[in-house]
Amino acid sequence: MTSSAHFTSNIRLLEHVNLTQPDQRLAILFYVVGLGLTRDPYLMVELDNLWINIGHTQIHLPTRAAQRLPGRIHLVLPDLALVERSLASVAPRLAGSAFELSRWGDVLEVSCPWGNRFVCSQAIEHQGPTLGITAVEIDVAVGHAAGIARFYAQVLAAPSRVELSCHGSPVAVVEMGGDLPTSGDARVPLHQQLRFVETTESLPTYDGHHVQIYLADAVGPYERCLALGLVTRQASRTDWRFVRIVDPADGRLLHELEHEIRDLAHPLFGRPLVNRNPAQRLGAYRPGEDALPGW
Image 1 (tube, rainbow, N blue to C red):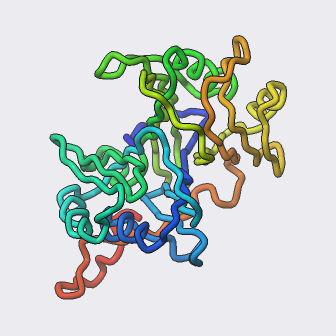
Image 2: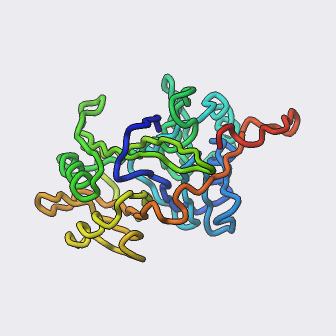
């Protein structure tokens, strides 16, 4: 999630990824103890859901049969070495699950107990927020990247393009970002991406996982999605959902991924999120350092 004071997209923020999981105990071990993230203390504190704060973004984890996103969620973290040690410490308690941990140069590649994959990078000082979801990368069928880029550009009015991955595969890159309001008069410039990577591997049947995004203009995309027959749920023209990504050129189905759409007037937009300092320890407690700086 790099800083870009002048970059603005109609998709201002990818706030959360929603992935159901069957065991809140294992989820807490992985996300809170291992990755050093924070359970939201205000909302969804019962046993039927779990919201994990990651800077200004979240992972939502309702308690149901596990869902798996066919791709990777990219995170930036303030202390990658600390996270690597914490994940190694919880590994014995995650034995028998799909948990995996490996280091490749400057990144950690991690799988949660149900196989969802994360790519974790070290935050760089003075180069944007130090904690958050920077990108969601999704595997799609061969030949679909160009149509997906057209969909986001023409239907959701987000800057989109097709580029090649390091392995030569076409990738639809959707740019998201803008100034996020925070407490007081401060504003945080955020820049994120949705990336749809073509793969020759077989893809699983869509299982209902979703992303939630905030649009500066939600009404125009609503009208265009409605005309295409895509709207699946709606509270209003500024609070609605769709699942099917289609090529606006011919209506061909390209991928399924539920999008929860809200506009910037929604009361949850820019809600301050609690982010603890995972380096704080009882035996070496430092007053005033419970929270990460800047949050």
